[in-house]
Amino acid sequence: MKAPLPDPTARHPIILPDGTPHAGTVHLSQCPRPVQFEVGDYTYASDFDPPDTPEGWATRLAPYLFAFSKETLRIGRFCQIAHGVRFITASANHATTGISTFPFQVFDTARDSTIAPDTRDTVIGHDVWLGYGAIVLPGAQIGNGVIVGAGAVVRGTVPDYAIVTGNPAAIVKMRFSAAQIDMLNDVAWWHWPTEKIARHITLIEQGDVAALARAVNPN
Image (tube, rainbow, N blue to C red; front, top):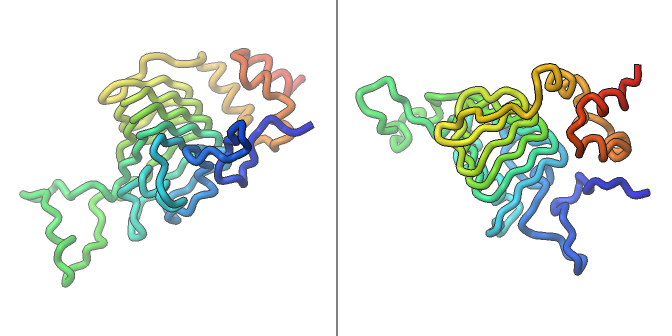
């Protein structure tokens, strides 16, 4: 039986009824991107106006992640990235310790313009859903299983399995109890082999955390 999972090596994981791939959805791991842009298998991005080239996906999602950037954008496995999401990485920031924030050195070829005022990494956990138009700011640390609401502006640390909305994004609800979250992070289904995930799809889709834990750790 074919596993009910997309092929993680396929650039376009959604196949339309006529047999053609849906150009507006891509596995980011299969798109060219800077070395500072790390992304896990099965993580996809969707856009109603997709870039003209595979390289365009990384540029659109993280427009300030340059070849000379000191920071890293790290996105886990099985994340879902909606239209309009942007990762504003640390290279977007200007120095704020002086009198002016104007980046004079950028325009002066005689000076070292690679000095970065901000080098914080941006880290997105596994199985994170980033809703329509969400903006993730430099240095954000978003935990596993987080839901980021449409239009939210995220900064700082978001704990595992929180739901955040608004600007600035704030926690409106935790998806599971603390004990259940510990259990889910221990199970870490996103790291399982494809065949194991396929066998437990129904439990993963449902909300019974204990049942999933029992299925994989019966003792």
